[in-house]
Amino acid sequence: MTHESTAVGLASAYSNATTASGDWWRDAVIYQVYVRSFADSDGDGIGDLRGVRSRLPHLARLGVDAVWLTPFYVSPQADGGYDVADYRAVDPLFGDLADADELVRAAHGLGLRVIVDVVPNHTSEQHPWFRAALAGEPGARERYLFRRGRGADGSLPPNDWESIFGGPAWTRVADGEWYLHLFAPEQPDLDWTHPEVTAEFDSVLRFWLDLGVDGFRIDVAHGMVKADGLPDIGRGAQATLIGTEPLPFFDQDGVHEIHRAWRRLLDSYEGQRIGVAEAWAPSSERLALYVRPDELHQAFNFRFLNCPWDPEAMRTVIDESLSATTAVGAPTTWVLSNHDVVRHVTRYGGGAQGLARARAAAMLMLSLPGSAYLYQGEELGLPEVTDLPPESRQDPAFRRGRRPQIPVGAPTPHPTVIAPRDGEPPAPEAQGQTRPQAEAGIGPQAQAGPAHEANDPARPEAGSGGGPEARVYCGPQVENGAGHGPDPQTAPEAEGQDGLRDGCRVPIPWDGSEPPYGFGPSGSWLPQPPAWAGLSVAAQTGDPHSTLELYRAALELRRAMPGLGAPGAGPSPDPRGMRWLPSPDGVLLFTRPGFACTLNTRPDPVELPAPGRPVLSSAPVETDGRTVRLPPDSCTWWAF
Image (cartoon, rainbow, N blue to C red; front, side):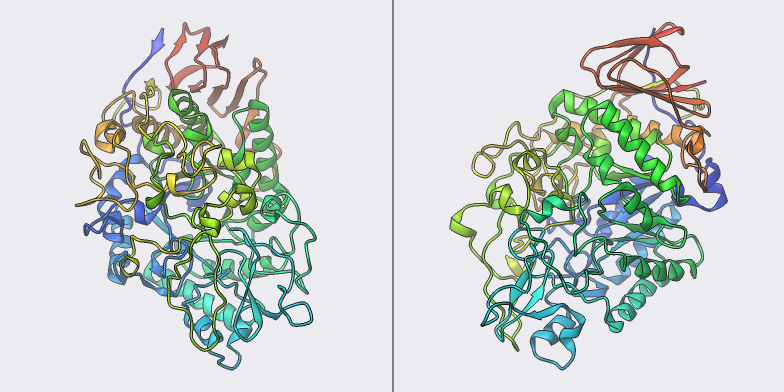
């Protein structure tokens, strides 16, 4: 018998015990909104806060617990807003402070919490502090990492550190000093040993907590403290070492005192306000230090995102991740896509196969103990857009070029228009990636943080009642309309975006038969594929075979089944009763209380004893109650 039925209301919200007890973050499903690509309210082609507010009912119906908003602060947009010029104001591109306040209130009215980005490692070059530093104001440079150069005339950078975006991590100003920027030159690194830096960010956090936000995603949470003396690394391609080897500019022990202080600040507010670390560490054990009981609540698990479509690799990552976080009493987080990586439909092969694997991987992720993060559009099965015209692309890794030295006393107007070196886009090797990483879109450069987006032409100054046992199948739609090959002018040897990030940031489709698919009153800042009409929210709603209905059903079941959700707090070798069972090659099978999950990674069907009653599957499942025939590239949830 093949199980196919419609995803309808399966349980009331907030049924998991951890949610009821107040530790909502332990099993929360958090939805990332890339603000400029979610919904546009005013017709300028760029998403904004009013647009986000208008689409909150979609997220409430989807069944997520919280919304994470990418930066909307005043910014020259050299790095998609991750270059902040004013941490307490909304950029006019996205609205104003009243819009932010109304969005938070509207979200809370729908039962959604709101998490916002904070960017503490660096500011914009247009931040008043850095402008004062360049103007020669006494003491202003002490807030940043200015150093004299090496060599007889100081013409060499102070050390051999490289920018995550390629090239030296130092830029020289006209009086001969150099300043550190681990990312773009427009993003000077702060010196967190300076007491004014600490005091300023305490004030910034309180400002947004007082407005009502429920927490912060901390950008580059591993980067604020550098090793004493800023020692040389002694080798190049340093971006490839992130998350694999100790580095003097990342994951220094000193960052933990900052996070402890922030945890005390968060705990001083009512309502379980949380801190989430975007942190890279050489091991799961090092990453777990960020979520000790007196530090942050969560840290992104990028090892799971990077994991190939291989059952042994997946099991290893799952086991090591759970072991490390359980040892410190914290939940593990799981994520498959975000605004810095190629969408997982495309990473898993693209087309029908990539979509099948992506759907299965999402079900696997949502069945694991802990908290899960969804990236906007993944619930629609959106693939990477691989054929964006060169003139539309915004990622600075695509348009990286030489930058002139900055004169002291007169900060350079923003943006600075610079031609690419030799008139060509950079090779991925020059960005600190190996060619295979770039082709897969999963190299450290693609994930360590959003890239600098100088010369942004989009910126004005720059130019259903079945109960928990309901049997549900939501089958894949066929094809994606995202373009069927690399852009021959930009990535002749690679699939997808050659490690660049524009293709995952294309505005999502809401309704209609042609672009901009309800994104806004007019066009969109990145062009949408002409074949995305069938992937819109409106087109998929009510279709039992759609990816959207699969996600809705999975999230309802996750709330309804007591065996899903968060692990128990405190040390345990077996979080929340998760247990691996013997299974055929290519198949993962584990149980949790009253629940089983099977994942078939093979390209062919597999038969095995049925572990229970099927309640949800990413593809049609044939079972006679005793045995089951698992479809290829599929995941099935079982109740028993």
